[in-house]
Length: 288
Ligand code: PAF
Image 1 (cartoon, rainbow, N blue to C red):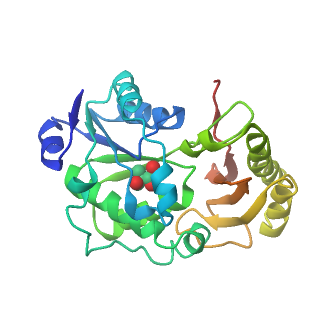
Image 2 (image 1 turned 45 degrees about the vertical axis):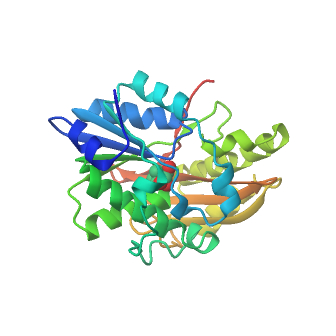
């Protein structure tokens, strides 16, 4: 496995065949490992990027305390069979404060957008730089960040990046908690409370399987499990452009953002159309 620190080194190490990229901010966990595994299965060569992107943090304290675990991350990449890790420093990614920003309008206007001003422009800008600088054929992202996924798909299409964007299922703890690098900050009490997010989403998924299509009813079903949480929003949104839906009538996701104590978490359940029926993607529960 080659560890590259500049775009040029990474491109040089890229090799022949179809390249799959897994962009990350490090602090890798089993959810990231499943993205790396998906890339290894689908591509000839696999690149992972590890970069804590300052542009997407609206709170400097959050950036400061974001977990940084490079040695353990490299080990996970090695075990997964990654060929090249691109781990640039901030000076390589942003040699000067960038004057160009990629703003995906409308898709960024809902849910996370108003709560995290500038966040999605930071994400779209860094992912556009990774696509331009590393030139992957495929890129793998978790469905847990469903709105981010919609933004990246829109950005890649609008800017004609020749990359296939692949969304991969959310990994969950055995109790249902969506895996996230932020989970390390949860106290025992907060962790128990945090289970309300996935319980609520699973209840709504049950309701969809029972034939309920009204967003208000689905949202109330989800909220009924979220008593111990400080809920910012529960929304049904289109997978394509993240716009709010009042009825489940197209591929969609039910998303929640809530504080478990001091820790802000997001989660969602996607509703895909398979054989003409709405099928919830509840994620995958993993041991450990
Ligand atoms: O999902 C993440 O970890 C980040 O938002 C991403 C896509 C790596 C961009 O920094």
